[in-house]
Image 1 (cartoon, helix red, strand yellow):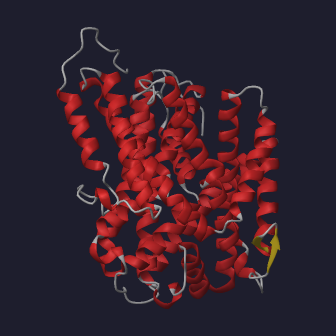
Image 2 (cartoon, one colour):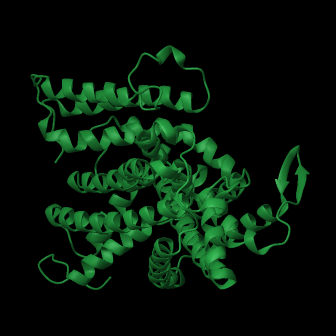
Image 3 (cartoon, rainbow, N blue to C red):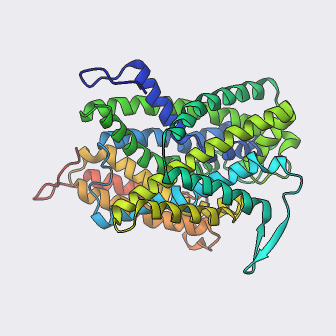
Length: 448
């Protein structure tokens, strides 16, 4: 971005640059692999499924960024210190070594390397575990490079980012145009839950992008960037973060809608695919041949690499602040090795493992955003924050256990339990009760 003008103002170019940077933060592996598969499975019910997906994958990240701006980066300020730390640790682990970073490496393998090798099925056994040879080799090299870039960050990564984002945008715009002009087939029939509950299924599928969780981290990161640019007034920070959030949301919506339609019209190109990356790769190869495949592979690989470097660096910095005795470089090495290890679970397996965790933690993140907006309306804001998040966590655990395959039929009487959203009504009722409660004798401090 350019230099800020005087009086704590940013030019239009600077603001657009901030918006595109925010969009680039979000544009990673999950944004590319989930919409095509969801569109394929939703078929004729694509519109409702897409609306649900956009609620959790675009609208929620948007309002979360605005909530972070509203709270001046202190969305967890009214929680007990241990609870705020535990929630932050959970979010960093989820978007870092546990799920998001390994997933990015696997998407790079699936879309950037696997299509070009003759035999990707060779396996070997190690300590009783069957490993894929090509996947192990690729992820070891991929996370090794990510580790080096995280250990010695320099201008190279910034240059790659500046070149990468415009290329990625051009590619996605071309892809969107091709999807409309050259659909793979007629829209297919809906499958599974997309037949009976396409809207709810789309909402839950949007959890997988992890963008709402990432918004809590990215929002604070953007505020720090604004401070370094000389924007110190909270009101001005909020204004520019909100503008950046809307630019990023518009870009994400454009990507998701085009990829949803690609999946819905993929036809035979999607047969047997267990993730959207395969569908996207098959479509590009079918429509544009080898050159298109190479271009897609290069951009996806670089996008995933820069995403992993950012996540590993952010996680290492956070845990270094939390535990200063552990050096940043040691944490980078540990995070990178952990990512490479987790990545060899396999993409489909990693996604299936992550779903129960996301179904558990997302209600807490959504509830946190809701109470942040309502803080000034609560007579007892500190109590309200703690009560609402506790209820969201309790019922989120119930939904998470159900998603993990545990028999939770005892809760079938609860509204939306079968749809995996049992947390919604109890959390909403708790918010209403907190809004109606009277102020205590000693008023709580209101979050600014």
